[in-house]
Length: 437
Image (cartoon, rainbow, N blue to C red; front, side, top):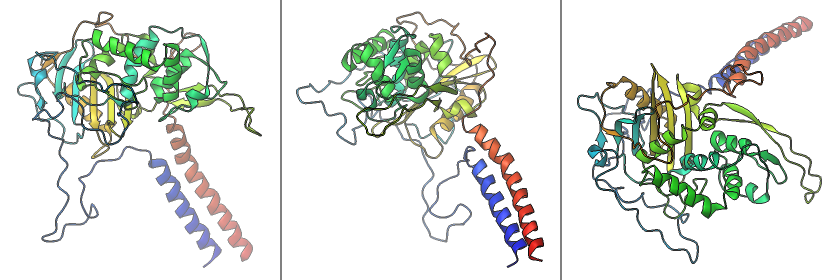
């Protein structure tokens, strides 16, 4: 094969590769699952995977407690009591229809989206508290890291955000998702809140809880907040959302907690922030040759923020027992809606995409319709003038432009740089071909 042909083929293959890489981050389009390739027709008599259906909750399987755990993470420590079941309020908080366990929509509403794998979900109005649609709204499920919303409420109303906290080995050793706190690192509480809300750092949750009196004291304060808000399906067992004995929440309660948190301007700011710089930490003298660990950027892990027009922000969660959990808000035509998902899966579409479908559905409903109401009681009165989340201002006081997704810049660079690289390879191949002649 001639050198010129080698160069042309190499350039084409490389161009295709870089383009595919650049486009790999775009949202996937959901297609029905089958046993064969999507383009192949099933052979006569062959069986195919049945179409996806949302889990049925009509018989109220989680009316009193979450589904059985799949591991031992919720077994009480030796000497600790087994938590009793949380009483079921009667009548249901939020109105009569909130006591139903299946799908609940306003009279005359269109069918709900078909791609929802969340076992329980709810769409409500952030400002008025109207519940627009729901499925098993008071069913008990595990919150995973969405319970960090309750921790944020406690911490943002208790801690000095400018106080500097020294990272510990205990922070670094926590289980689950971590932002990267290191022993000896210096972090303001504001930075810890960024790590907690944007990156769901369990190490940040540990460092925050240590200032609130430790894990037990912090959990007690989180549960006090839930009770004051009449979120009576909720019981935190850990500050971070890691599964623990008695952990519980509901789609209704998660909406209540999120709505309360949106009364705190910094919470509203942080759920809308895409990327910030996070401090590093010094070398560990006990590790030979260890060097100082420089700071690094951290990005918001909520994909709805980058991919849904009008997204305000939210909180993600996952554990083996809880599965995928999600709470987020968006604005359209002057209306702001909150969506919550519990015990979801990544099929047939990802949780943030399921949330997007439900938000679209909620925005399309009659603005006067409702099936229930969020409570108006709490540690602070819930007002319709909740500050709209926005990017933080610049140092000069002007409003910052919305930041790009941390992946968007790389994707654009690849799309631009790919063709340039192809041209360069073609020129080199041509030069080599001329030399050989």
